[in-house]
Image (cartoon, rainbow, N blue to C red; front, top):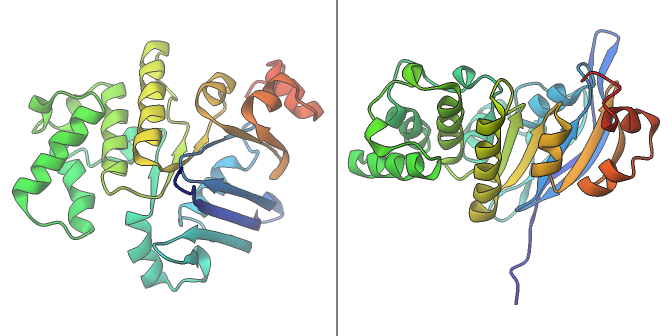
Length: 259
């Protein structure tokens, strides 16, 4: 008998406005364990604002962000600030486009992985170092680099280290903002293979914001297309990309829009 797949995230009518500009307008969707959702759209479509509302970085004006906890469901923005700050580090991980925004450049690679584990309660040095070595191996970084500073790593290695740091606490939900931006094609392919294997291995739910339709096709199970803060089309990735219904999606797929 197959284990039941849990719903990890449900977003209901989430809206956020900056001044008179609607960044997100009544966005609703759900995401299950082991599933990858791609969010695409041109610059200014609202996809990054949505991601930051889900990550607890920006409070929405309206709507609900419901996340599965151990035995119940919590509403992220109904929690008080102290409870939310305690809840977020072990439940949601945000992976930045620029890895330097998600790493401590002044501490070692091992220290970067150990730091969130310590924040979650781990204190034993030997156990922390062993976990750091395990995660370096998972993201294809040689264990001998454990004491090296991230600043001497390549861009691709920095991104893989950021992923290790973000996933070491086994969050339920991982949010990625343009994770392959600035990487060459061969490095992108290795990173996408890594992400697919980690999603399967850990059973996490993953949201990837990207302007790259190719990345979305390779990585996402489902696709959500945003324009001017609204979701204009969503469905299985292959269905949306091979038979787009909305004129804007058709333009994205045909690369007429420069996204």
